[in-house]
Length: 207
Figure 1 (cartoon, helix red, strand yellow):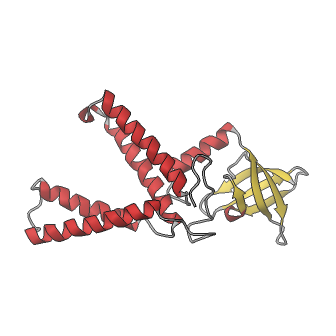
Figure 2: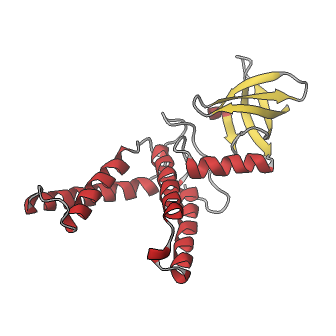
Figure 3: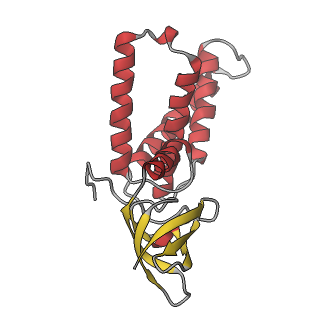
């Protein structure tokens, strides 16, 4: 049967939809098999033994629904995304950086847009890590050791010896390599502790 999603709870990965007959059913995000079931989405679904909606397929989305999905993708660290969608984001980001560099020198870029790009990239990377069942802890380690290296290079810290700087640099490269691997690693099949398996994007298909 078909219905319309009325509301979603991103904290608990659940939602409520209303069927064509007016009855309301709860559902879990892991039972959404195609697309993202945000409020306003028209879906096709079945009813399971617990009287909840299951086998949910997104059939139609409104403009507001697409804006909600875009906001989740760019500004939320919850859930998972596929590596092909990550590649699409990185390609778009690279094009934006090159275009910006062509027209604007780096010292003239306002701080707020630069922060927004860094934050959205962080959120996208976290969701990519989640797809392989890894936490964002690796990003924090990367930032901490990177900051120590930067401060040492600028002579703003003097409590780290030359040997310590070498160790910090080695750890930074190690964490960077692992974080790079997580960005492109194959995701977990089925559900993991961060959510249901993401749907691959339509532009690129990676197995």
